[in-house]
Length: 369
Image (cartoon, rainbow, N blue to C red; front, side, top):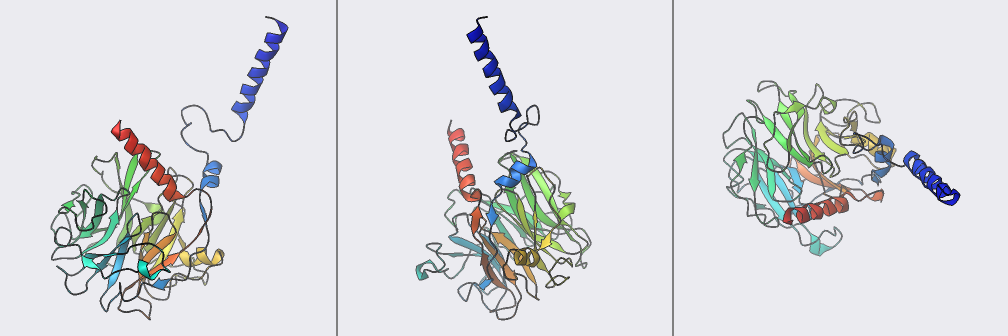
């Protein structure tokens, strides 16, 4: 080999070796698809503190109970669970619409809610809606449609994701998921990395009459059309107390839950009879961290208390992770349970909504081809 050619060959080999050993490269071999935790942490979005909760006002709240909300991907449809007059049963699912998302613009105000009709609501209690990311499916639980137990999880489908009154009749997700007692408060999460879809929900493990028998469970499936498997306890999110409704950030790295557990507030105890708590994880392959009271987390960020001395529950997170809806029994509302909203600002890191939109576009292109 000529000296010049041999020198070039050695130089290229050295460059390749340096690139292979560079610290910001992922691991090689069978585990190459898994991110290292430090990289995953660096890629997580960072948010400012949550703002002081604001009552959604008389357009949404009444002298009845307004609770268990869900917000559409575009932020223009707010689904609420209410026992106000004019429904089909005890508690029905209603929808309020708005023309735009600017909370300071009167033209963007929420309108009077309308009942979703008999394809969703029954003579029993129908509540706790949650959307799939594509907006074509709505999961909720019902006590008035029969099925496997005292309360079952159902799913309804629609062709037009912007038609709030185009839902086909709801269908029971089946007795593999639903058990003999109460299965309620579903939350739907699609993991774009693994292709696994997880349905989080609360399960009443104890017989009726026991108020402390609710824990967080998860059922998974592969792909969009597969059946959900048997639910498994999520021990990191469950406690000996009531652990009920959840809301997960679009990237799957932050989850909010309603829990009656004590402790972890800045004054050494839970702020109310049931509070909003938050848990995080570095990647979707990791276990959830021990939940912290949202007051503690927010006050560490310099923000106000979110939980009050009364019952606060049923969180619903916007698609971009910056707006949190929930219900509260705090004084000063219009009824026993009113809906409130709090917001936060994305400070740095990836925008989870934009990332998800890009993934959706890629998936749609792949499906067309």
